[in-house]
Image (cartoon, rainbow, N blue to C red; front, side, top):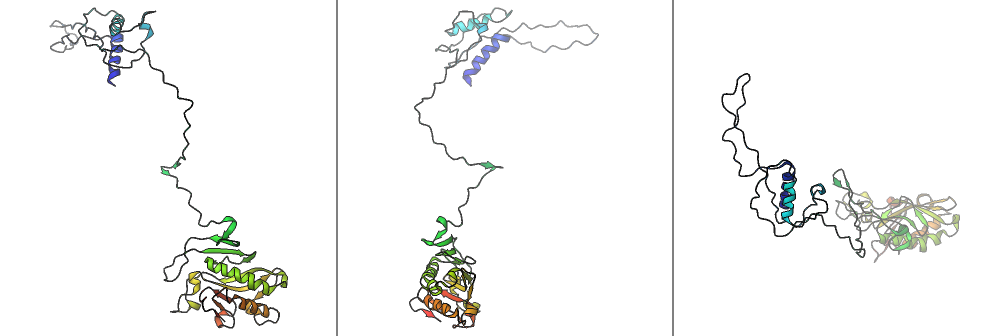
Length: 323
């Protein structure tokens, strides 16, 4: 800023003029003359101020001078010439002697330097993503999906379709699933209600369908179209009895199947078909085939709680319990 203050003072000097610092100010201010009364005291006049000579400080860059104040064809190369031009530009200014001033050792520059062009060989910088600000806050990032799978594939098997869910936790001790999945289809057979379980249960269900249920049905009704599930993950005790142990349903280890639906529209219900002459043998084959893929298999012969469905879970695999 100090570099340009000296130049600004020189311009003010050349236009309006200035007074010498040696001029003396009046001892007292002039008092206004009262109306209708002649002045009793003589008026004191102050001599006009003498212009100050501009002082150029050591500056590397100075602006280009006004061409109207430079004689045609003249080229100012030193500070002395600049002082003469500024003094001659004053209109009707009294002649004053030049005071001794300290001049800069380097000559002034009367034009701005042009910026250097950027090199064309300079590599372009990669653009970075810009966070969008809305109403004074940064827009949040898009959250990750709760479930993600390639074409609906889960548990590392193309024939098991569904969704991968976030871990399930519960306040009740013993409940929850660390890596739950919601199954919608197994080997082309649809599952109603999209039951939630772990992958071990899903793979056991696939093993039972391929090696037990499908061969047991055979070509009857065109084959199996879907399964109607009646229970999957549920944080509860066994048979919902108070004080009983946590059911395998509360761990994602169990699945209950109530009806096998055929492609021709027929329905094989465990409740009504277990003792039926037509579909009874098919259901019993399914029940026996499940003992192996699952550690616990319960049906209508087990107790009154399983008259209308098959209960399959993956516990007791070392000593399967099938009734």
